[in-house]
Length: 55
Image (tube, rainbow, N blue to C red; front, side, top):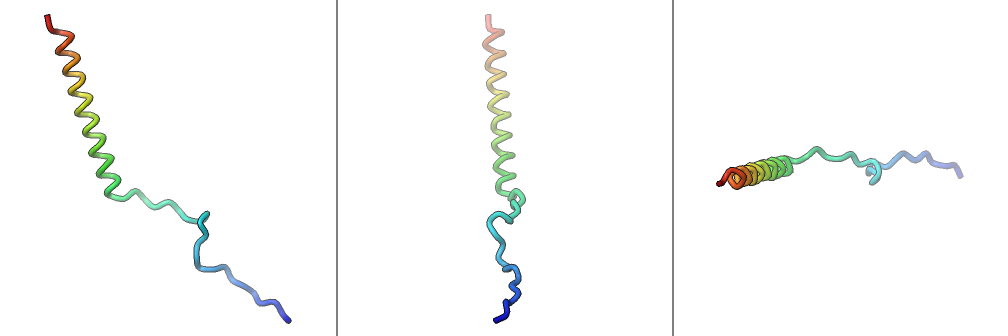
């Protein structure tokens, strides 16, 4: 009996999977969270300055 040459299967192995690019939903959510954090930070700074300057 002769051995048959076997080719690699077309199914990719779990270790060979390349990471997918960031989806637009993730980009939008990160932008919204970043904007909200900046607004909250600006409000906190405004309140701190107002409290510091009150006489």
